[in-house]
Image (cartoon, rainbow, N blue to C red; front, side):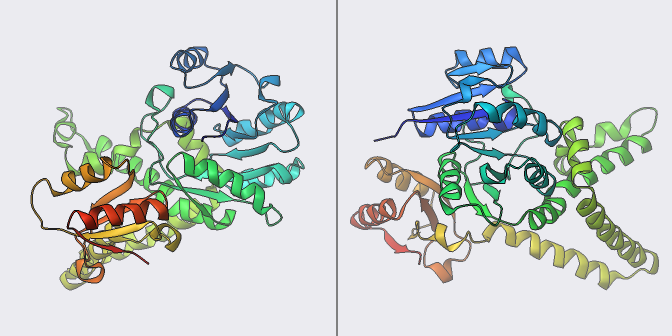
Length: 367
């Protein structure tokens, strides 16, 4: 039976709103206390029963929360956390959801709150922003980075991890500096480059706007994230300025190398460049999750024909077995199955194995 729990959320934008919806969907007994300066968003969340209590400033309504997510910019955290803490129990933990971790970890250390804070960053999002863009499945199968202090207790980390899992995300632990370097490479630099690409095309467009009309397909795909919140990304860039500068300098070295190959007509060099990049990019689709996730996975040997995935999903649904994720296995010779299916737990995996085996499918648990 679901256990009643009270969770606080400060900031009901894309991330905060999605957290509230996901936590409610996971546990109907969860009580959500929210704070946001946008009265319209608070009202909508209350009307939709996404939150149970709403306020425009931190107050005593947060006093029974066991965990509070701070879904606000780093620049606002000091003021908000200082206002919140007097109302909180000693057991209440604070977790942020910002895109950079070193700065906020240092901030809570300076404030003397290391014992009640764990850094967090859900590795998901959208070019859209605000509560209207939030959705309950935003975090499904996404990494949720947690950056605890060295002295953070296992109990505290476990409590936060359990709630993160409740959103459908996969918690992964990293050091703050390691996270910020990784985020600069795979998130912050792409945003900067996407905007630079848009700027270059915009400034090169002719008076009749022909480039605007032609900029479809690949260009729109690669620059989609340039439509994200300007205020958010200017803040992120400054908060992570050193790692972002370093990876952009590395990228500039790559541009210089590419320019040299163009200038000297190095066809073999260009061919190797594109092949190497393509091979690494294609491998992203078959990257394995950590071993603790693989413990709840099976591969199913099926014939490649229309409707086979639907048939298997229906067979499992008929026995109330929930599928966490399902997809085509691109390395069939290794895992002896064309489908890779992930479940919430090893118990569900074992039950699914029995059900599908009885139905005549070849099933193998992944160890």
